Amino acid sequence: MTKTLMTLIIALSALPSSALAADKLRGEVFCFPAKDVSKIVNNLKEVKDSRRDVVDVDINPKFLIKDGGSWPEEFYLQTEDSKINIAVEKPSGLTPTFLEQAFAYPDSDVCVADKTRADRPEYDEGLYFEMGLSPLFHNNSGRHDMAELIEGTKDGKSFYKKMIPSVARMFMPDTDYLAIKYNDMRRTGVQIFAQVGEEEVPLTPELYKEMFVISCDDLEDMGASALIIKGGDYHLQPTVSVKTMKKFGFGQDLEDET
Image (tube, rainbow, N blue to C red; front, side, top):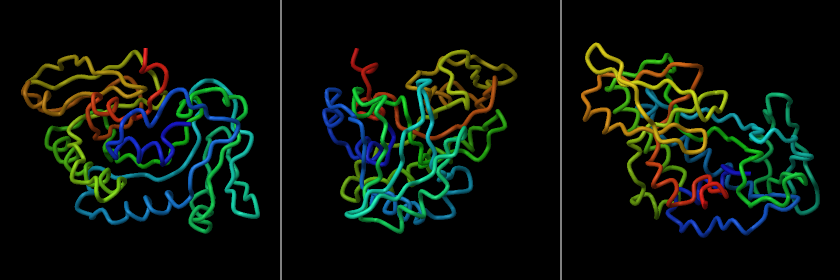
């Protein structure tokens, strides 16, 4: 289950990608410390309002099934002497009581029982737990002017820095790339353009997972006045380069090692 809190911390803390070794399996139960939840959520609250007018996080934890498989058998907090079950709504995958319970039991472990994926690599993405920690652009109208993109990429770094240990924040790379993720998680059939004068110039973004990544600097260099996104509902987020994501193991799975 990738993009749990620990995956994100590892990815952004400049640890070697061997930390996500593909030969370590998920097992029937996958767990991570609940204290990471409250710590990161509280840290994100410290981001200034002036950094939230173009991008912001939407923390709304939910499961996504990306491999066509089943829902987890159980989702729960494990304390020293009890198991606290957390409901997973279907088909949305939402877990409306998760944050409340994670804050109430910070010394517990957050666990997912999922026997059907036990033999997969530890950070396999078939069953994906999305916290909503990535800063997203408020605007999803299909047109993003360059002033908006430049401000959003600068502000996005403030959010990511709050998700990594303080000693590593000075090494946080710039989030001067833009990732487009369509709501249907498609990997083909995108319609992404740069507005250059009166012309919409087709772009060839770099695909990484379900994200279509382009450089904000490249848009500036080609004299673009706006980024145009067509073809369906989407979210746009500031991010680091694909090279950096791969270097630090963000979302690493077997696909990246071939």
